[in-house]
Image (cartoon, rainbow, N blue to C red; front, top):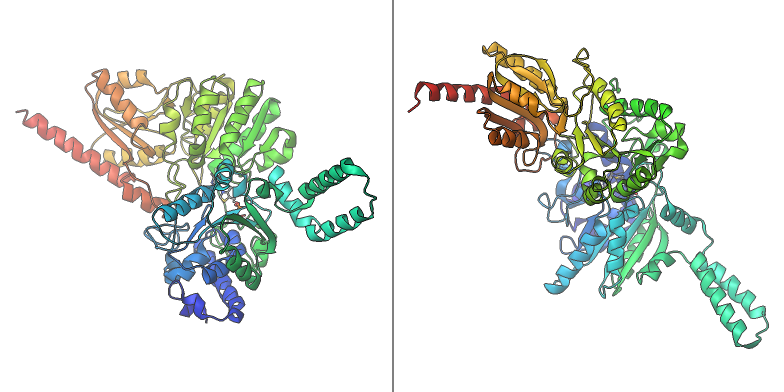
Amino acid sequence: MLLENIKSTGDIKKLSLDQLDKLADELREFIIEKTSEHGGHLASNLGVVELTIALHYVLDLPEDKIVWDVGHQSYAHKILTGRMNDFDTLRQYKGLSGFPKTRESKCDAFNTGHSSTSISAGIGLVEAARLLGRKSTVVSVIGDGALSGGMAYEALNNASKLDRNFIIILNDNNMSISESTGGLSKYLTDIRTAPKYNDLKSEVTKSLKKLPVVGDSIKESISRTKMGIKQLVVPGMFFENLDITYVGPYDGHNIQKLIKVLSEVKKFNKPIVVHIHTKKGCGYEPAEKYPTRFHGIEPFDIKTGIPIKKKEFISWTDAFSHTILNLAEADKRIVAITAAMPEGTGLKKFATTYPDRFFDVGIAEEHAVTFAAGMAQGGLKPVVAIYSSFFQRAYDQIVHDVCLQNLPVVFAVDRAGIVGRDGETHQGIFDLTFFGTLPNMTVMAPKNKYELRNMLKYAFRLNSPVAIRYPRGTAYSGLKEYDSPIEYGKSEIICEGRDIAIIAVGNMIETALEVREQLRENGFEATLVNARFVKPFDTQMLDRLSLNHHIFVTIEENILAGGFGERVTEYVSQKHLGVNMMNFAIEDTFVEHGDVNSLRRMLGLDAPSITQRILSECARLDEDMDNPF
Ligand SMILES: Cc1ncc(C[n+]2csc(CCOP(=O)(O)OP(=O)(O)O)c2C)c(N)n1
């Protein structure tokens, strides 16, 4: 096995060119095997096996730098840089990350996870090398999906100024997670299907030669025609017009060709786009056939491609998907927007049922939000369904375009809280803070799937911005009998006790129920409250509970800073309610990858840890009572 001899970067160069195709086969087999066991981003990784080999063959890592856009396609790169033996820990707690991590290897030049950052980061690395007098080739690898993100254009606009080598590899597989959408995708397809410019150019020249030359104006118009034709048919004119040289398209699965091209473009003294065509899922039939399903996949059976665990639950996303469809049927003004994630956000059915009211804008969260603002201003009722961590991108648009104009946009904040194996770039742990600080914004979190439905209905009746956050995974279906109508800014009492009041945000109600039970076993009868509203939160409830409770416990899966608990604490302090506050939230840290339960334990957000801390606090308060001086 060739792969076994590749223990660190550079080992690949000991292989002959003829051996590289076999290496590609081995890499593919290994990636399929490990992803089938641990889950991960299979289709994107299979698409870049040859590209990765070629890059490693031509570049000298870690001096040279590869920035992988999104980074979900970096498995082959990890294997070739000495991390093959770590693949049994892939995406597990304390194990190998599914994304590039500078802390994991010197060969990971830049951390990624969110899309469309690679060109900006690449230019930064080029400038750093220039100013620090280092010689290093910088390569940014960006997919056609990631190229739909606005940041990529801001960076291209800047790249045109560079007078040094900078290689941008456009890995074009005509797919984002689903099919790529929009004008750029069409442009790339046109390049793919256009007759070769050179053939056409010679045809054009031949025809021009036949024309009688009559005066300057004809010459001029001929030259204009030539330019016009060139604009139409030269692949990559878009980049060329930005002063960035374009070459390609090349077959991205032809290692020899890629090595040749990369060796050449390395010598070039300007930014250059190398356009390659690849097949998502290449080399594994089920993934080639169903690239969307195999974009990110749970463990599966290699023979059939079928997931090992059948999905037998209703997820929060399913609950959203079902409700939004019903609401849209009743109200023609409801429109839905996704940023390249119709499947992930549960809008696929909406898209097929109401194609003219559905908008996939590509990986363009900023645009998605302002576009929604425009539609709201125009009289529609948009819902923007985006994962919590990707909403971070659109903060100014939420502030400036939606909240400032108090427009009725509903933000469906999916994957809020700990998402697990995708790790720190994908954890949805800031949204309560960033949505919750904005004037005109209402923030809600449902305790169960029924409440999600009720909140969505309620949100479309409000004539102002609303964010509803719900997590990844199985939708909680307990506490069904607690279904009092949603009232603005009002919480819901689940059970009345005394001394200790636990106020849970959204899905943390499940943990809170456990905590209550464990406290009861220790002789405490706590009150349990479902917060429902994070902004505005229920101050009347706090005032009332302060009369017969001396500890308020808040539980939320969000960063502590600026979250629900901190705001309640501030209120309690300012109103001198005389209650001891305990805020359970995520401390000032990014949360790595791993299974959700391990991560919650690590963060002290699991029921036993919470109970333990409450009991200790009770003991401490008792002691203080006994020894007041
Ligand atoms: C800002 C942001 N929005 C959404 C995503 C989710 N996402 C991950 S990969 C991906 C598609 C990327 O497509 P492309 O760049 O073409 O790479 P491919 O997977 O096709 O190789 C999307 C939408 C993300 N990572 N970042």
